[in-house]
Each structure stands twice: as C-alpha cells, then as structure tokens.
Image 1 (cartoon, one colour):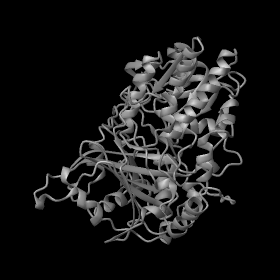
Image 2 (image 1 turned 120 degrees about the vertical axis):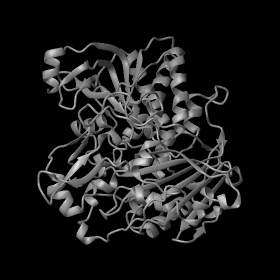
Image 3 (image 1 turned 45 degrees about the vertical axis):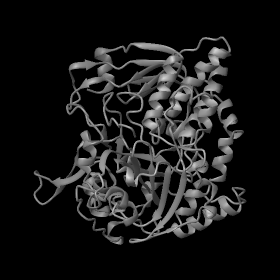
Length: 566
C-alpha cells in the first residue's frame, strides 16, 4: 500500500501541537531544546518543545571521535562540571604523525597549526555526553520521544513547514499493514528545527525543495569508521591524542586517523576517508583495518608475548561527516524551520570537530525561534539565526578553515603545505578562497582506469570483517519491514555500476549491506542483494552512489545501532 492509501484507510493521523518541534536528539537538537527552555524560564514565559529521536534512546546512534571543545557547552550550561557532564579526560598531549608503510615521522608540536592543538579540550564518548544533555533537557521540561523517527515533512497549503510525521509501525516486507500496524503521528510546530546529523533524510529534501544550496559549493563528505578498544594499562596514556596522515591511503586521497587515549584504559581508534575518492576499488573499511597493522598503531593492541593483557575490541561503528565547511554551507532557514549542526554542515573538518558547532548553532536557532514565538509569529523565516551566526565566534573559526578540504583535493602534499601556510603562517587571515565544483558521487573514475587493490584477509585479532564488526555495533532491524535502502531504478546496479565501476556499493558500505551475488534467474549473471538489517545508518551509500540511485529512508523507530560508550 502507498502512504496515501494507508492514510485513506487508517487515517487521519493523531496530531500534537508544540511551539517548536526538534527533529533529532543529538548535540544540536538537544541544545536547541535546552536553550529554548532556558530562555522561557529567564523571561517567565511558557514554551512547549518536543524532540524526536530515531534511536532507541538519546545517544544510541551518536558516533564521533571524539575530542570535544567545551566552549559552546560552557555557554549553554556554564556549570556543566558541577552537573556531572561526562567530560572527564582532558587532552594531555598532541602527536601528529606522517606515516609510511613501515615508519612514521612526527611533526614537532611547535610546527603544528592551531587547529591541531587540543589544549583545554576533552576526550569523550559523545554518546554519553548526549545522554547527559537529554537528562538536562528533560529536567527543564522538554519532551523527548526516542524511537520515533521523523519520516515526512508536513507543509501548509502555501508551502511552509508546519511540522513532521513519524513513520508507521508494523508495515510488512510486502508493504501491507501487519497485525502490529500502528499509524504514525503528526507533530506540528510554529517552527521545526532539523538536527538529523550529516546527510539527514529530511534535511536533504528541504535543501532540494527550497534550493538552499544555490550558489554554494557542493557539500563534501567523509566516512568516519571507529572502534573502541580496551588495552593494557601499561600501554595506555590517558589524554594522549594522536592524529596521522599518509599510509595506507594514496597521496591523491583525502583522509587520516585519530587515536585517542580515553578514560578507563579505553583506546578510541578511528579513520576518516574523504568520499570524493576516485578509485572505485577502494574500500574505506578495509583501509581502516589495514591502518591498524602499522607498527606504531598495533603496538597499543599487542604485547601478549610480553605478558600484557590481550587488547579487546568493545564496539564498532561508522558515520558520514560533512566536510565542505563554510563554502558548502546552505541557507539554513526556510519558511517554518531551520537546519542546525551537521544537518547543515557546520563541522570544522580541519579540527575534526563538530559537537561544539552543533551546540552553538542549536543555541542560535533557539534564540531566534524564542524571539519569534513570543512575538506571536509562526511559519516564517528565522532570519535572526543566520544573522547571529555571521557575528559569532563559530563563523570566525569556520572562515579560517574555509579552504581546508579544497586544498586536500589537490593531494596530501599540497593540502598539508597549504593548510600549514594558512593556519600557521597566516594564522587564518587568508586573502584567497578556493572553490570546489564536483559533488563526491561524481568523482568516481571507471574501474578500468584505476588500479585494483588487494586487501589482506582479516586475522580476527587485529583486523576484522564487516559482519563481525556490525555484530558489536548492536545493530538490529525487524526483518519483516520494507527495506529502508531503496533504489530509484533497480536495474542500475547491474546495468551501470557493476560493469563500469566494478560494483562500488560492495566496498564503500562499511556494514556489508550491499553484495553482488549470483542471479538464480539469469545464469552467469549477478544481482545486487541488499542486507538492510546490517545498516548502521552511516549514509555513505546515499552520498557515494555514482548515479545517486540509492535513497536512504527511515526504518521503523528505535532500530539501527546501539553504540555503547561511542
């Protein structure tokens, strides 16, 4: 059944009205909600706020490095330490390594640009920070609905956003309602703030509908893949932050690693690969696994022969990040709503940090929405939000880093040298601007023009396959539901992607969702099998598919990964 048919038979949907509806319970969405309630209390006003979160609980789908700059948090909740915010491990030392296959060259700290310095920052589990933010929001009277994904934007007759609808529950694989069917609800607001994170499902629709990216550089993304390990205390250095560039990626591919020594003998190991890579044979997941075999990295994870406790891999996850920066930032307001955090693309790729930007933009949007609601307005543009951003410290920070990703598309050497000149020599006072013109999905070259890459088999101790990795991400999707990974044209994978690009879907996905298998109906041919149950909601396929044929839509509420301490 189509959605229209479902509504005709089972509708109308129940609706709830609020002053502000927030879509997404991450740092940006929760900060929006908290700031709204703070302003209401300070001004002796009433304002109703609801936060919808597609994960089973706030923080379940949060994945980040993460080194957190507390500047914005200190503005939002000045007494966060006294309130028990889980920022416990300050960064004690920064190390930047340029890797070759067998060795490493350390850049002296005095030569590191400001963006690679982390004094005053904290190594955190952003998922745990988000759980804490959710507690602060609820104490202020914010309603939080976990397990309720916003599946549809609702509009007024004249094209303004009036709220969202949650997805239906209990739809079978055949598209028909089952005995567990439950119609979605409408959440209506004077303003709706979208905080879905990078490549948000609804945010993408809004950007297209209102042409919010007209005149902007195409957005650029990276995929971040992360593992959490417990290691022997003898090799744990609390607060040490290591970043690397170079091997195993070729010189023409943007990317690098982070290795953070968190509290409780935990080691955060992550790898970011720019999704503008050109070789369709490349697998970001496999590059990450290979990275861990470097002598400087495996040293932390081995040592049983020296009597050390075996290292244990605790968790795994992957998530796309927005890396285009200020030049790719779309217009962030439209009639009835706003985009905040990574939904808009505020992440500072040069610092590998987005949580402070998410919190700050949530605050700015909340201040604009509060002013509008208390003035009796609704469904218009919150022009005060982008105006405030342009006057903020965040705009200054992002402007200094505006060329970062653009330089790196010219190769590692050029990117490193020019970033050093812009950030270290010129200290962010840059007289030039470099633009990008190609979207990430358009960057793939034909497989015939690229070198094949032979990746080693996983050993199950240091390196792993996708399925065992997905298992420890606690990912689950009800099998009897329509696949949330949809194809606009089912013939494209085998008609175009397989012969021209050697089936890149099977390699850019870090969760084993896409695989080409023998086609029983056509001897000697292959078909694309979509294992939607494995999906960790990273959005890479939605971004990198060369024909933009894959469309990620919301599965049933509460499904997907449940990341512990990530």
